Length: 147
Image: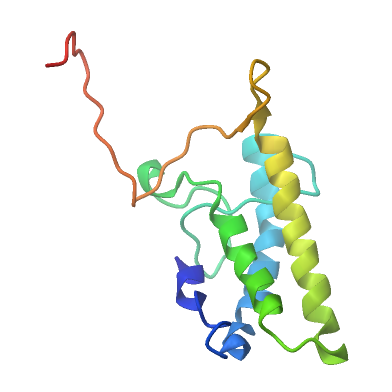
């Protein structure tokens, strides 16, 4: 939940604290291309990061699946870069950050364009199954009735 450390920093005038996040997420997006291709058969233009990473920036599943099988974690981090731009003073010195942010977002969006599927009966896009430690649940086996 690295990105959670940055929530609200832009709105209170601390957008400069995002600077370390830009190269981290940019690097994560480069390594996450491998995970997107291997795990989801996505194009080289897309990237994914799951619920756990470390200094190796490995975008694949790096812990028990019930903790980390969350394909939205990369885009969640990427959105913090966009928020940083919204609350930053943009000038020519920030041109590289703008390009990096848009490139990272483009790859995350591309992943979801390829990862999601359209329900033909409703036209609604859906993702595959995923997990989150914040949304755990129990699976009851061999239950024949409820109540």
